[in-house]
Image (tube, rainbow, N blue to C red; front, side, top):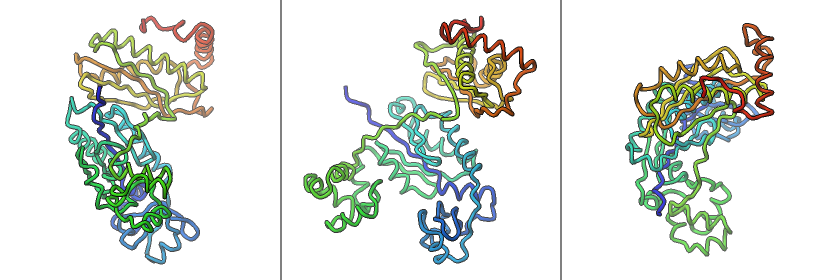
Length: 381
């Protein structure tokens, strides 16, 4: 059976670090701004106004000031960068069937097969707009048949735009571009290619693959394939480092509310047990629902830090009731606990700390000896 045509979206938060600084200080808008050191440092990021002076990321700050003496150096709000990155991640995670977080400001989404249920381009446009509306961050995306093509399309769509490369048009799209548009072609390789009379991606595609292999080794073979728009990199499922979660895709779509509530309780018990084994507590609960047409939604709320089933279960149930389109069949149900910490200051968890702690220790000891399913609430049966 022939594999389905792949559909990959690449999202990039435009000048992410500078954009966050501008949101926190609107007076910086349209001014030449960099994030980075003043004298001995390098430019970590720069605004589009700064780029007009020839400034780019990775440039020594000293040189940047030579190009633009009135350059503004933003302080670098590390906590804010993390907050905005998590915010965008949560929006994408709530919607995307499969996504990879390549960096703090870059995401790949695999929509392969989803064209049966919706228009992938319109879906991606809508997701981009949702991110912009909620976070106010500028974001560009490319949509194509593989990760490399989607990334290049994103670069061409900047600033704050989007671009689709239709299937079968990859080679034609790439042809006029300089060879250093291919990800991985650095200054050294660029100079080597120019010494061979290769300036555009079309020039690479017209050379014999054997010649490129002889001159550049395996990298030459890889370049030849990329010049034809061929790239086989997979989108790797993103796993949030500071969360625990579980989800279940049902064999048959479910509408029985008693069954769904029972499943929700079972899931909370499972991941709360994992929390206690890691000696952590959680400050945020999320519930995720996916319907038969692959529409995926989630809802979350912050809670007092806890690892106790009986404190998390009512919150998860309430989130479910607010999220579920009552009577609609459910394909997948999931629960996630995040904002994890093992900070002793935040472990004053219970009304009766000692009694409840001893109870959970006893329950967990039984689970450790006889399996996680050996002790469970009646409501999870």
